[in-house]
Length: 348
Picture (spheres, rainbow, N blue to C red):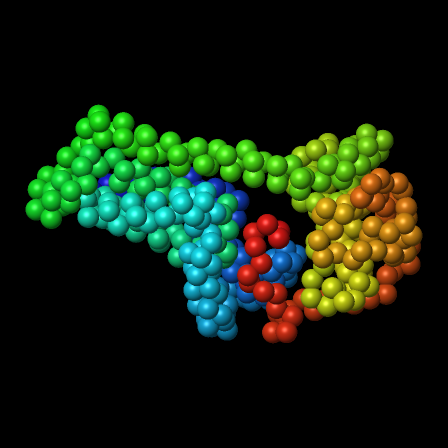
């Protein structure tokens, strides 16, 4: 009965998702998420690879790269257990508290703990074998981890709880003193998270934010007509300007050693999107050519239009001669050009 109820609730929960797929794609089961797996194996960190995935479908990808899929999945699980769990939960102390509580709760409330831990493990394994175990993709695990950690702390008497579990008798609810003790134990864990957020995470976010690029983007947006397309090196900056915004891709593969290849691809992208300006910042340059920050144009289609400390503004000239250079082959990467799967979430 419980399984049927859970299945029915899950079906109702995902029904709007399949209705939306049918409305947009004409097929409720249309799915292109397998392309993320292809990107993980062959395109990372070049997001433009998603637009030129050479596989016909997930079946072909599985046939050709099953070994790489399995190896990548186990590698991701290893990295998550080695460091990702601590980052997701807060600190190594939080990860240790979760591990201890999981073992204890399995003895005290085996069924409830088993459901929680199994559902979380299934989610983790699915993400690891199809993509990267980046924290933002695993936020759904936080409620499960908190329930396990603090549920175990709420046991009113550990020796008594162990005897109840061993005897198979009915479980007991924590008493008010036990709940008070739980809050006392939880306070240091929550306090440590607050300290880490205030002194670590927030300052790091502020330090990495591309303020100069945003300022130049806003200046450009104020003086150009509505509808003018502006490109930039930082993703998601379109929220700061009321103009169409195009994030330009990072350099990848042979483009790292041959900037002309990157400029040729960049020129086509800017022309296809109709971009009139390109804003480049030192903070978001990443693997793109250093010439984008130089005072002289690195390519014929770029004209100096201003800038500031650590940021350069280029006017895009669609009439300029085509940049000489070949883009990376649109097919799969050679093994020597495949990027490491170990790059962190923050690298993107």
